[in-house]
Structure formats: structure tokens, C-alpha cells
Image (cartoon, rainbow, N blue to C red):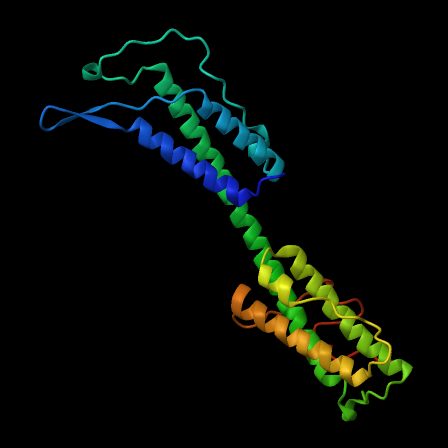
Length: 251
């Protein structure tokens, strides 16, 4: 099972912190003096880091991660005898621990950056969906205004107009569901049936109005706290519509 980037970031942070704690350990000598006395760790820290690196390569396509090398184990280096009074900075195990700690911190930093970039992209996409949902709300409100000739009379043209609005709502909802990991959205909001037999156009319009306003409200208050709504470019609007055209399609 592929590990999530957020989980990997937390694991790498924990590994780095534990290594730092071991390396910075001190032992008290006499009544006041504390001397550097690291807690040496075995090759398992190398195996752990390499496993995290492999998981990161699978979970994130960042080019720096794909080119980061694995760390080699210490091997059969002769043990170094040391005296705590003289310091232990040259001990091979301490050097290897520093190498793993540095690599873990670097990998964690890159993963955290990729999470922020992904969050920014998702935020931007949500902002676009909010604008489109607002535009859809205007179309829904105008769909049954007599002065615009949009009387819902269950005719074929009327039914097609309502089905268009439902299809657009489903399209925007699908974008949200694909972009977010928010479990509340996935539980609360579901696609609407486009062509319900036996359901009047007015009832279907009320259904899509309720769904559209609920999703829009949730996005604006929970996920995308926006300022003034921005206009979308024509490429971001449904085919055949402009930023100034908010009427529903004619039947």
C-alpha cells in the first residue's frame, strides 16, 4: 500500500528528531560538568531511511526526490575506541547518524514543499469551482423567471434546460471530489440524477438549487474563505458561455 506524503513527512520528522536527541545526549561528570555522550544507533536507521525514501519516490514525483541516493550501511569498519573525556566526534557511528539525520531532514523539507504546492493548486482549483457554482446559482434563479421566458412547463425544452443545470452541478461536484480529501464533502454531497422519470421540472430545479447552495456555502466557509469573487476566463466557463452571460440555456 502506498504511503501518503503527509504520513511520510511526519515519520521523517520523528526519525530526524530521535537521531538529534541521541547525537546531542550528554552525560554529567562530577557535580556540574556535562560531556558529549551520544547514544549510538545501529544500521536499522539506514534501513528505515531507505524505506522512507523508496516510499517517497512512489508517492511524490518531485524530481529532487527521484534523484536522491540511498544511504549505505556502515559496513565492517573497525570499531573505534574512544574516551568520553576526549570527545567522540570522529566515531563512525556518529558520522553515519549525522548523515541519516541530514538526509531525513532534506527529504522531509522537499515533501513538505510538495504538500504546500499541492494545497495551493487545490485552493486555486476550489476558487474556480466556487465562481462557477455562483454562476450556476444565477442560472438556476433565472430558470423560472417569467419575464425571461423561462417558465418551467415540463415541456421538452424546459426539461433539457433543467437537465443542463443538473449536469453542470454534477461536473463541478466531481472536480471537488477529485481534488479534496475532505471526508465531510464526500459524505454530504452526491451527484444528482439528471433525467428522473416522474419528477417535475420544478421539483428537479429545487433539488439542484438546494445542492448548489449547500456545496457553495460549504466551500466558501470551510475550504475556500474568499474575498471578492473573481471573474473566470472563458476557458474556465462551460462551453458556449461568456463571463457576462448568466442566463440558462434556451430549450
